[in-house]
Length: 237
Image (tube, rainbow, N blue to C red; front, side):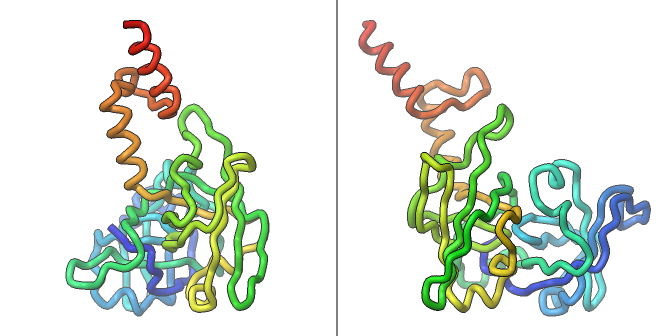
């Protein structure tokens, strides 16, 4: 579990699509250097959130660590587009003895969104994102995005400032302090960003659908359609 409060910016120093070493596991691996501040208490098997993705440390030294990236992760996130020299947001798993800032972040990315505008506002920066259309295996993220709600972008806990269901967009604002601590402000228009919506909304939706008997088919439909069916059943009695 993470908080979405970025601790450090690391540097991608190696990307190996097929790493046949023991720590590579004969799959896609990535090594991140300049990471000493978050490795003082590191162990093999620890979880580190890299640009919003919970990854397992398979090898490390005092300055760098290696992680393996599964095909599912590559297909759902923007990690596959990272190259040597890119900076990434890093956060260690939340410790029980520290203050809890940000919000509950799992590091389980739902999808990617695209930056479509960057607008300075005083010393802050407004960013607008395009949400991808729904697919059979990936429902729309829009129902989980609400103004003043939480969203995780490349691992950063941010407050949503606007949502447009019509345009399938949402916006956030970055204060000056945040801009200096994360990679998001340096990304250009058109860049993909990892997004994880607030998991509380997903649990609430599933609980409501289950209570209304809409999980029998194994597929979640919209709450509106569930209510319509319930009303039809009541009127038919």
